[in-house]
Image (cartoon, rainbow, N blue to C red; front, side):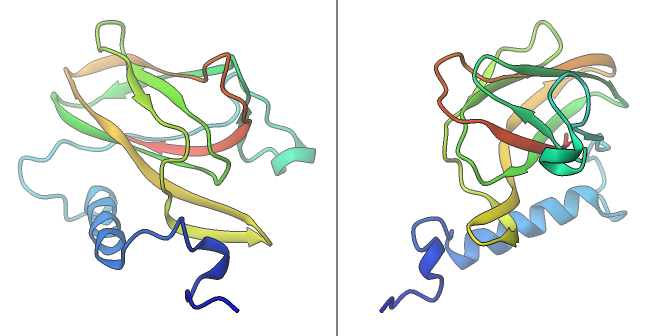
Length: 163
């Protein structure tokens, strides 16, 4: 018998305090009560920029990316500031790199980054949020790009992004 309260997620469940802090941070970003001086946020759906979104995989509601694949989306940054990227994706571990614009250095996300605010979709299947890093941006139109390395063994689905 398992002694852990979440036997299927014993190694994946972050400490309660970190979960609450991350959830509050996320809620602070998306609520109407954004602290004074905080930049506005940018929300976009992952599908269907140039990944595979089909009725058979996710009813067309997520973009699936495998090794060597990428997605791009033009976003309009409303004001200069530092923005945190939050990604909502399936549980499958997958490393990737991302950037906004052409002068922003690439940021790398390791495979297996822990997901927060998990929603269980079925036995062993979950979708959740994770913080992928931060970026300082000027106002204006920019291209967000996410690339999965050729040697990354996993395919996963992306639902939406919050910057």
